[in-house]
Image (cartoon, rainbow, N blue to C red; front, side, top):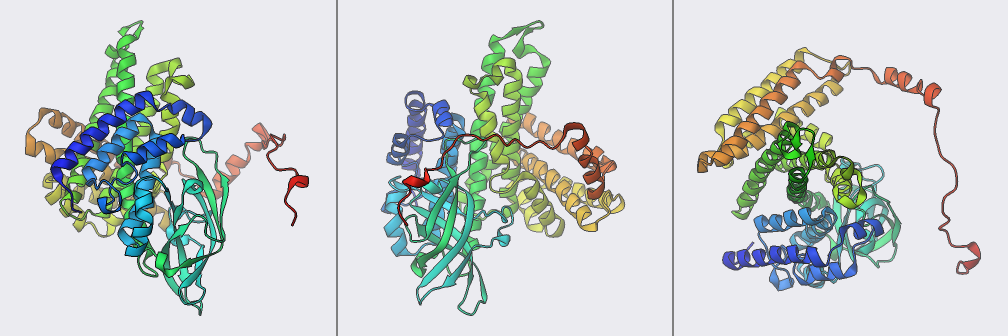
Length: 528
């Protein structure tokens, strides 16, 4: 991607300053949360300042940021309001990126100018009732309808910004006119397309201001011109968007972590308890130290990956997984500790902390749940790890960490080959992969910090390198000693029997009292 580096830096500095000022005078996150809606003026203002076309060429109305600067913007938004950060991230990465990188030139010219400026919004429809973290399980399909037309049918759920979007990138299984499977294809579908029907909104626990709703594809007709790539290659566009989406989620989490640290310190310095200032209490010191070290470790990895991307380097898929696994888990822990340090004040809705806890929670699920990604990461390393070890050695500049990680993976593999807690071999292998994924995540964070420390000699990075190494070694000890649940593992039928017995003690609770009536009276329906 071509861009003017000097202008880029200046633009981003001004953009971050504008965001900070804007957040003080024009954003009320609690009202957004309570009313479950982002005010239209905010969307327009974000669009007018380029935040909805951050990586779109100026030719189409975008501001053409590089990866490092876009992640800085998302970090800033994550500190201001994770809901707004998620909205901007979904639009830029899941909504805009597939069109900018995989649509035809004619479709780019048609859609990008309005999308990049926020006059239209874009969404990404992959998830289905039976297909979440496994895209290959999707059942929505496209069948040929005349020479240049396709008919799409199926149901997509929990689609961010779908009801607001003018364009929805939709991924379906494609078949030829003889029923032969052609692979998964992506289409940029207009919201007003015949047969596309917006379904009900899901009342989510967090990120309440951002709509998540069902989308019904009732034989939607779409031209081949709106394909994202070629027929059967849609997962290339989807995976590209999701990989960068995982990196963006990590930047949003990083911003949220920094805001949590600020609030924790602000309160702890002012609050006096029986032992003196709360900030001097060892519990507070341990929590804040753990948080600040995790921030440095995570930021080291994110910044290194962004720098490599901007230099034209390809990043192994495992590195994106590590970012997505670690960042939301750190953010969730920070939000939980924020509430705990604030005590009763942390439980008061007007004190920011409850909304941060709710908003951070879903990031552990978006773009692949932590457990699924751990299993995926462990499987990749368990079967084909050389490319990733090379990445740690060469790009993260941490060959000693790579050696330690190899040794640890072999130890875990040997341990679980002799100690089996599951009667089913497949379950044993999956648990092995999860354990490897967890240790690889911590090892990669350690490598990122270690490489930067070797380059700079910074004592600040030295402390974080020690912290990362100790966390890695501590996790390895736990894995090699066996988790308590491993040792007392029960089979599914035994667990079924145990939990079924709870009915005798607490009953089978299902509340059936009617709530509010929202349906239109049948006498007011249009005539059929």
